[in-house]
Image (cartoon, rainbow, N blue to C red; front, top):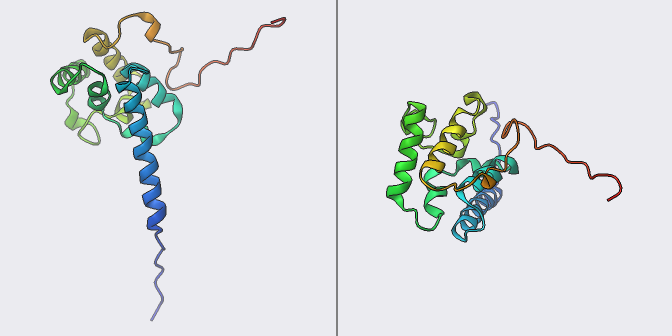
Length: 151
């Protein structure tokens, strides 16, 4: 009888990976709750962090983590995003509007612009100083600024 290969799955490693992913998502949401970051700044942080676990965060989670924004207002923001995109959450791969869906390169930034528009409309972004992004964001790395000589 031929021997079948059965890969060993290290459950402790899987559990640790899951714990780290939950901690990363929780830390970002806590920074919003503490008003250290705005939801938009959290989108930027997630996009530039390289931490794929953050991509599972839902747009509603980012919004409701912000003090003063509950489920009803978050639903209005998400509804505006989906209206702009002429889609529904059901058309996303997970059935929810996640950061992975928003930042998907195939959308060529259209989803990100819809989120930006909805955030401005609903008071999640108040002024241009909160829009610290660069040309090509989030699909190109940030430009590096060389220090000026003599300083």
